[in-house]
Length: 99
Image (tube, rainbow, N blue to C red):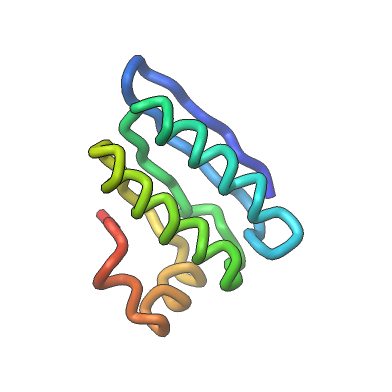
């Protein structure tokens, strides 16, 4: 997994590439938490994610909860087909802020 963050003032786009799984999901969790706890609005781009497991999905749910708690904007954009299928199977496409 590779993570690239583009900062633009109070707004960040986090672009994720590759697989999000148990071995690396904590890295994504830390990056998301750091950005959200800094008060920035976040767009998470998952267009280039080829695989996501339950630990990766947990990161998305946790980021959504933190954004609500901190009253910051968080959205998931440009889902890859594999991520979209996982979120739909878990019915999380109705709960997560997907745009």
